[in-house]
Length: 240
Image (cartoon, rainbow, N blue to C red; front, side):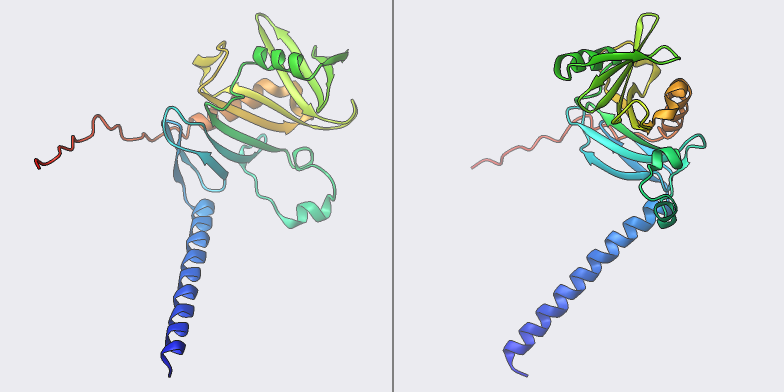
């Protein structure tokens, strides 16, 4: 066998082995996501996420960087959301949020939209030019905005603001709400840790129960800690 053939064969075998190793690593990670709890570092905190919930994450560890963890669960059980092909074949064109009570949850650390309801309404007033078009039976003022509808209600000194992607008042729509992860942050204008929730419009009347249940679930996963580094060893240059 010529030297060129030997080199070519060796290269092909090496690349194949590398591809197989990479594929196995991806497969192993996917299996672990579905069958094992895993620790996730979000900002400067640590959470133990049970199998089946996590759908992706981004950002980095540290108290100066943004970070987020995306979760999927089913309401009201808050069990992991299991998507199947049958869901789409049996209900073509229908929203998983409406038919299967999907809730998308993003646990966010220092993201730009980790803000209070009042700040959300202020930003919407400034950029979306909301036009009031009515009031719901449960007391929400309804505003028409570029992306759909904005629902706002004053409760004491606090404002509740929900944004929904819907084409008409009769459209079911997918709604979004931001709440602080920790109750102690209620009333603040900006949150370090926030829950960004996406859910069916039909749950607007049950927002308090929904937010409370999801918050309690995520808080229960706060069971680990990032090791604190007190100091780094000093590196001294050797004499020349």
